[in-house]
Image (tube, rainbow, N blue to C red; front, side, top):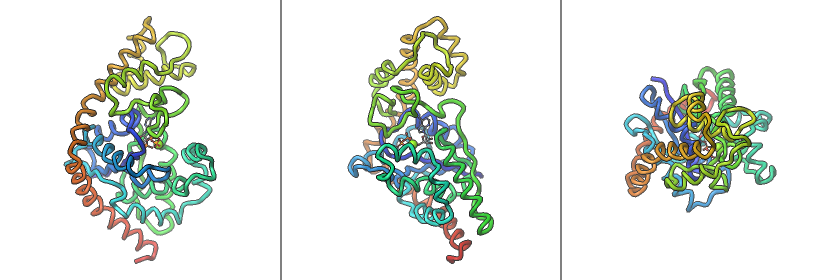
Length: 327
Ligand code: ATP
Ligand code: MG
């Protein structure tokens, strides 16, 4: 059986973007693969975190994985920091990655820019190499992620091929899987930037754990474009984004939604979209809150996941050692 690997950083409140771009697709394919879904709590350290908040966000992320439909019988769910092979393989890959190629990563450039490029952490620069280690450790064939991760996946494939060329066939070269809709949900207050859970403006995203009234309010206040038609087009980035969310949440094509709202106004459309999103998130939120009530159960699930992950990660790391002459 082929393997799938993916992860989300516990860097804030998981958003509808993380759900539509990643989680929903993990659930959709979990029966067809052997799955490894990781709470990437080493990646999250690449930008400053408050330890007290982080502890809670790690649990929330795990609870949301399970609540979204990730089944611990079918999928291995674990914390990255608890499988030390991730950091160990990242070091080996660091030594074949090139500063030039890492410098071209747009996620680094965007995130480094926020705090001033010189004060960005070395970890932030190295982020895609750790991500490559995450996936290559499990020899995963498929990586279901949002559109923003495409460049990192290309680098990951480059590193896998380079390692194989230098040291002999070792790693599977993974494929990216990006959904047709919901692959790049834009911020509600700015349709030119990606919705992100690490944003300091809570109005820019719908969080999976937002209560229904908050969800409705955020969507009502979402930025719209000039004009009044509910159509997807390049000069209507805000409405195009809301249509894409509607399409991804309901599984209906955008054209059908446009037809349904012909002659109607932004207000009607946003009101209905608010209900669509509330309905999508309500069962996930309820189940996640239940799981969060019993932190012991959640911790046990994560610990047993880490044990299962190590069983695959350890031999892969040893094999890479041997290939490089470290046996
Ligand atoms: P951060 O702001 O901390 O980077 P994030 O919201 O970008 O948080 P990540 O943990 O970086 O979330 O990414 C987790 C997964 O969610 C990845 O597969 C990523 O491609 C996907 N993803 C993130 N944001 C979006 C979005 N706006 N639309 C669709 N998918 C997204
Ligand atoms: Mg991100």
